Image 1 (cartoon, rainbow, N blue to C red):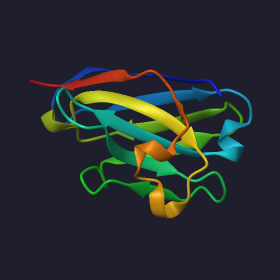
Image 2 (image 1 turned 60 degrees about the vertical axis):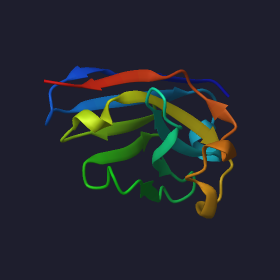
Image 3 (image 1 turned 45 degrees about the vertical axis):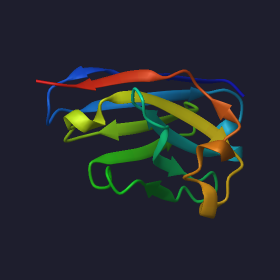
Image 4 (image 1 turned 120 degrees about the horizontal axis):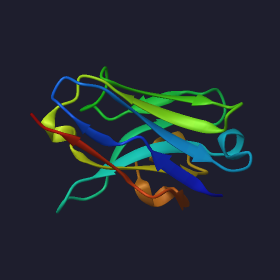
Length: 124
C-alpha cells in the first residue's frame, strides 16, 4: 500500500486548506483511513478517520466542526478539509491506512501504512 499526502502550506488564522492523500490499489475499500498530525516536540495525535465500510467518520475533539474527512473512491483519494484554522493547528499532517476497529482508530500504532507528512503552517 502506497500513500502520498500533499496539499499543505502556509495560511493565516481563519483560513482553509485541503489536504489530499492518494492511495494505491483498493486501499479505500479495504482499510480505515486516518489523518494524524505531529508538531515539533510532541507526540503524533489523531485528527480524523473514515471507515472503509459505511464511511463513518470520527474526529478529534479539537478539530470537530472545523475539519472534514471525506473520500473519492473513483480517484482513490482521501481528503481532509481544514477550515477555521488556528495557530495551534500548525503541524505536519500524515495520512495512514490500516485494518482498525472503531475502538482503536485513534491509536496511530494500529495503522500499518503511512504516507509522508505534509506541513501546515498557520500564522499571521
